[in-house]
Length: 189
Image 1 (cartoon, rainbow, N blue to C red):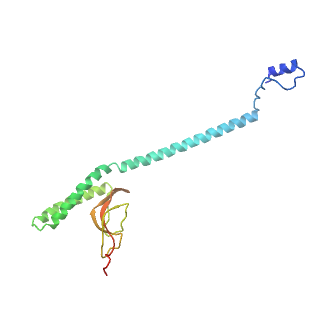
Image 2: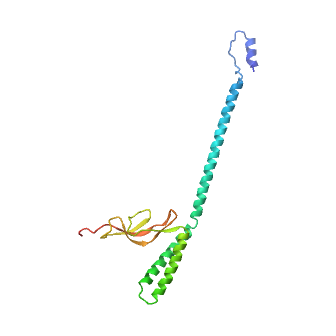
Image 3: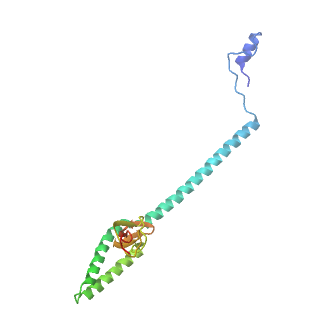
């Protein structure tokens, strides 16, 4: 397409060479250039579509994982509230075992049955006790309440568990409250 304004100026002023106040008209791309441009656009849209599909797939996987985690830990607050009740129950069972009364045997048997039922219920729901006594202190599962000297346990090992800790699958519901050894007392042989 020719610019008629520029052509008219050239014809009316013979001394005026290619200077013109008119801008040159845009030149249409050749068919080969047009095909290359379209191919580039197609490639860009293809890449965009692939990335969008990958993002969608990643989103679906993440949602599936989150849903599984929600289902796995859905009862955690209920089970956490049950743990202090279990603690008090176990304290009562220990007190009944220590009692010298004749009827204490029946009481202990009754408590032991209920304890087994509670333990089975917790296991069925994925709750497991954290072992503490005699093992190395681990701040990720133990809460140190105190530290004492001990004859046989090396420094940094749990002497006594005051309150049992629990896990729900891999998640810690409550750390075990423990007394930690600081080794042998100085001055002992």
